[in-house]
Every structure is written in C-alpha cells, then in structure tokens.
Amino acid sequence: MVGTNKSCLLLALSSLSIQAAAALSVTSTRSNVIFVGGLCEDDLSSTKLGKEFDRYGNVVDVSIIGGGGKQQPYAFVQFDTPQSAQAAILEAAPSSLYRQVKAAQPIDRSKRKRSNTSRQKREAELQHLKDVCSRTNLVLQVQSTHIDRIKDFLTNYISKNESIELAIEGQSSSSITKNVSLVFVSTSNPISLASALSKSEHLEIIARAVNKLYIVQPGAVQADMSTEEGCEIVMKDLIKNKIASNDDVESIRLQIFPPSCQGKVIAAVESLDDDGLAAKLNPRDATETISIVQVYKHKGKSSDTSTDALVMSGVSKSTIDYSVQRESPKNGQEAISRAYYKIKEAVSRYESERADFSMESYRDCIAIDCGSAPGGWTKYLAQDAKMKIVHSVDPGDLDPAIELDNTVNHMRMKIQDAIPQLKSQIQCDEDKIKVFVSDACLHSMSAQADFLLDAKEQGILADEVFFVLTLKCTIGHGKANFDAQVEQAVSNLKDRAEIRDLSVHHLFSNRIGERTIIGKLI
Image (cartoon, rainbow, N blue to C red; front, side, top):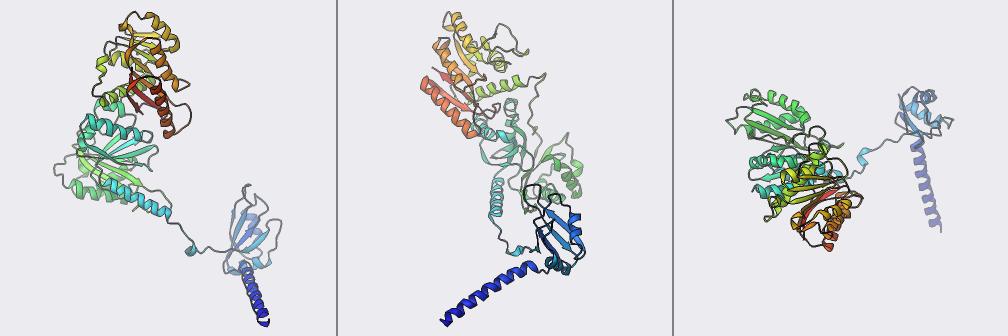
C-alpha cells in the first residue's frame, strides 16, 4: 500500500514538473522578442503598441499580424535586449489594447517535417521531359486550346498525305508564355516535315493553331535563358556540339523562344565569340537558322533554375519560313474567313481518309447551305467546289464578297420555310440536292440532323447525299463532355437513317464546343 502511494506521489510530482516547465516556457525567454496576443483594436498601429511596451526597454520593432475581420490580430514586439523582453513578460498585464503577453517561441526548422512529394513530382517531370527531348528533332509552338487537334492533324493527315514518318513524343504547357504549349515531334527528316507544314494549303488550315516551328537536335541542356549564365551555357553547347561541325556557315539568324530572351542570347554570342559568330548574324539574308527553345522551367519557391530548366537547340538551313502565318482577313471578313477555312479543312480531311471520295465528283451539282450568313460555306461551294447551284439559306445578309450570280440563290428565310419552297421547284432528279451543309447556330444540337432528315423525307435530296454538319454544344463544358454529347448525337442520327462513311472531327476552325461530322446519307 505504501509502495502504491509512493508511486502516485512520484506521478503527481512528475505532472507538476511538466506543468511548471510549460509555465516557465511562456513566462521566461532568452530571446528579445515577445508575443502579444488578442489585440483589441483592428486598426491598432505599431507605433501605439510600441509606446505601450517602451516602459520595459528600448523597442526595436513591432510587427502586427492579422485583423481586418478575418482573424483577431496579434503582434510580435522586439526589444534590444532579452532582459527587456523578460521584464515585459513578467510585468505586463492585460489592458485595453491586448489580452496576453508571453515569450515568443522560435520555430526549430530542423525539426519541421517537409513532404518530399512536390520535389519528387518535379524530379519525375524533369526526367520525363529529358527523355522526350532525347528523341525530339522538331518542336511546334501551338495554342494550348488546339494541342489535341494539331497532334491529330500531324498523325492522321500530314503523315499520310505527305508520306512522312513521324511520332508525337510528348507535349508541355509552357510556364513562360500564357496560353502556349509545345509539341515534341520526332521524324526521319525534320526539314521535310517543316517544309510540308509550310505549304500554303496546310498553312490555311493550321495557322490558327501553330505559331512557330523549331528544328532542333535531340537532347537538352539544363539552363535558364532568363539569366546571362543560362544563355552562356546554351551558346557554349551550340558552338561546341552543333555549330563547330558546320564549316560552311556563312550567315545566321536566331529564332528564340521565348522571344524576350533574344537580347541575352545575342549578348552571350558576343561575349563567347571566338570564331567570328557574332559577325555572321544576319536575320534578313541568312543561310542557317539557329533555333533555341526553353522547353521547361519550373517556377517554384524551392526551384533551382540551374537544374530545374531545360533548353533545346539546333542549326538548320534557312530554306523555309518557320513562322506560321495566314493572311489576315480584310475589311472585317473574319467571320466569313473562319467559316470558309472550316469547310475547306473538313473536305480536305475527308478526302484524305476516303480514297474513293473526291469533292471533284460533285462538281456542277446542286448544294444547299443552311444558316449560311455571312457566307463562308457558300463561298467554298460556289467558288472552290464549283457547284451548279448553291441554295444559300439564311434570313441574314451575305457578305458583299459573295457574288450573287446565277450560282448562288440567296433564300432569305429559315430552313424549315425553305424546304417546302425548294420541293415545289423540283421537276426531275437532276434538280435534287446532292450536297447538304449546315453551320447554323441552333438551340438544339439534334436540330442539325432533324433538318437533314426532314429534307430527305420531303424529297428534295438525291438518293445519296454528301453532308457536312457542325454540331454545336450549348450546355456543359470540357472536352470530354462535348465529345460525349456529339457521340450521342451521332448515335441518334445512325439510328434514324442509313449513314455511310461517317467521320467526326474537331477542326482547327471549330470552337472548343464544336465538332464537325461528315458523311453520306443514303
């Protein structure tokens, strides 16, 4: 029994010792900083609070934290000596300005547990991009909203039509320029691929998506081009490994991404110039192009830009224009221009997919363009596809650029009103419509198919009709959601009619929520 009481006494004394130690930790300090809690005035100034404590010693600094209604403010008061801070802790009592004074407990940063998740994720991302760069010899600078479309265009259109083997190695959202992404491509001949993309017929299609092309050599150096040191690292690598092997370099131009680093790159060329390279800079009449691309740069508090940044570079012949630009529409014709390139790309993609299809076979046929204003699709049908007649149906005005000759029949009405009128004009099978296109803005996505099938039921369409329809998603957001809506609309169309050779595309001229379907109605 005595042993039990002794154990209880020891336990009680131990508990009291712990409590005493805790009390001591808030009433004594070796620091010259104290914590002042529960400030009673949201707009209390550091000057006023400092005067409250200068009776205990010389106040060096006052930092007030919080306030503004979000949390009760508190402060740290720094004296010139620990003795003054100790005096304030022992003597200061709660007042109209504050509720509590105690020792400020310094944080032992050596005992803080830091998560390695962020660092490991960054290291894995960097290593993955290094692997991608090791296989890449062409980098495309693209609009981020078009990245999936350009990848599809390269693999399913350019590769087939230009007979060029290529592979998409990866992509990276640029942390340097807003709304810009980089697509990494490997190909047996980057010059041929870059030249193919620069053809006028392809430029018309991809100009909305691709800004520039960079021919590079596989591999990357770790450098940050926003610093002079980083630019020197890049240029040393270029001069040693890429320029030295090109003895016939006569004149060069620089193609830099991001462009804001060009000044530092030129300065690095001049500072390292031991081979007369600076004198060969001639952007107007260059025989070679030096491409330098910052493909990765981590922007984090703990990042080391000497290791958390990657740059690719290369030297190539200046035989093509690496800037992808399409002639800007004139006189406010942007709407007609976008629509025109939309149907032009749709037909080109369909011809590429179907070896047995050619738009030329519909020459001198009759077509209908529903929701035609301002007239981009009508222009294509009349001038490019050379339809015999284009019934251009829309209550609105067509653009003055559309020639209203014997080819274009502008019907100023809605499609549901135009179908009966066209039916009354049909006298033989030659009068029936063989091409049905619609880019109309409708309240329901299914209405596009409804008008197509209604025209078929009313007998104004030929036995086999080629159609191009824009399905416009009006609800929801996100690519997956839009694709699901279109898939359902296509399934419904197939259930209601005999459809052959159907293709679905997200064209460069489509908006984010638009998809174009192409096929034949039997």
